[in-house]
Image (tube, rainbow over all chains, first blue to last red; front, top):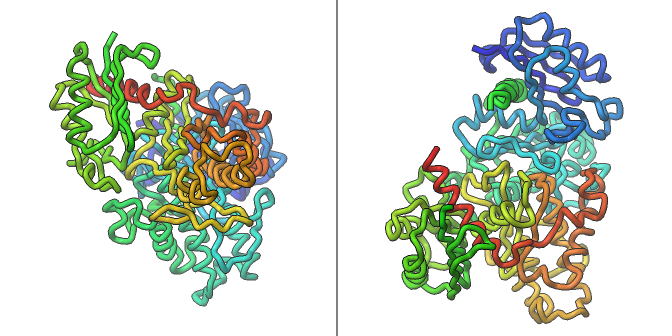
Length: 297
Length: 297
């Protein structure tokens, strides 16, 4: 059985592992995301001392150049983290190991991982959305991660606002886009304390948060028609938020999408990740495997 | 070369043809959509007198059951046209001709047709959105039409409203969803005359319409990241509307998606159909061909 390296590159930390599945990780390391030389150097050092790898998969923060015909395929595009802009991640890893390298966004990776081993098993079309310090979304359609012009940036869609909600939003690009209204920093700015300190006396925090997220989930249902949406990230740990988001999603749909999956309140449709914090690492394993398959086609 | 039958089933008319490509249609007929027996009977009568067909593709109004493992695959789901609810279109056509039958929504079909012969040639990921008496959207990702839970119903997404716009919308399900704010009946209700009678003195009609459509296009860019969006339908013939929609889409994106395709005002990104009113018929040809490929896999 092939042995894979996997790198989950987040904005605040990197997780690297070696294995064949998320339940068979032979070694794993976590370290903070600093500058690219140091961070990718640590990833390479860790992977270098493992048993020989057949392929490596990288699921990392974007924006990324995922166009295989582009001269800068495999690199980070212009990003708010200036040190990382234009860093050619795939070439660095490929040259260090000489094995096939798979590469996609963290959220497309998480969708692939959950689709193989987690909450999206056996589904052809699923989405993974994370609500944390930012909001990101990725997905798989008929087995293919979603990309085209670039890759999805689902956190920045515009949604209607709650009629009583005058919060201007925190997104430096858009103000009141989804991320600007509903990510962790928006909650902290809006209520004066972070999501994990809201406690159970959440007042209107859950109502406003679920209004925004529920409309966003409804728009995803209407746009892509996924068989399931996996909703992860720290903000979703606010008590009652997942349940309130399901209710708001169905309210927003207004009965228009009449499917058995929605008959029981969408409890099996809008779900949390089964792999917990291993979704991204699992995605890297799938990306590694796909990199080999591509070579053999 | 294989000869295909193609059926474009619209809410108001059916178009049936026989050929190998939209530039090689050997015969074609158009008739109004009435009850299913009469309408599908006319389609079968027309196709029966042609040369022997290798496969037939059907691109038609939904909602449709497109799940190949469903007991009711190939039928119309519950629809505002009650006579058509639960009609098993694929079985009727299959039994009449004994050849493979492809089946998808009118808008996924149009995306497939434009992708093969029209404005989406050589693109892996493209969307087709039509703005007419309703608003519908479909698309192709890595060659696969988008479906999952059901199929996209892009016309019913919610978008923010223009600050000066108090129009309640015309959608019986949602009021002010995209279709409720921007389809033909919304324009007629809002301005007291249909889109094709607005003339050049459109006042704020273009501004309001472009605001809604531009936000919707931006959300599609952020959600699916298509390489191109093809925007068809009668409403898009309003002078200046396509251009204003491009401007509003880019305004809504706020510079967040920084790609060459947007550098020139997105004139090659947000485009009209190249096949004109043949997109759907072309899609049926692709669906027929895919039905044969699926058999041979």
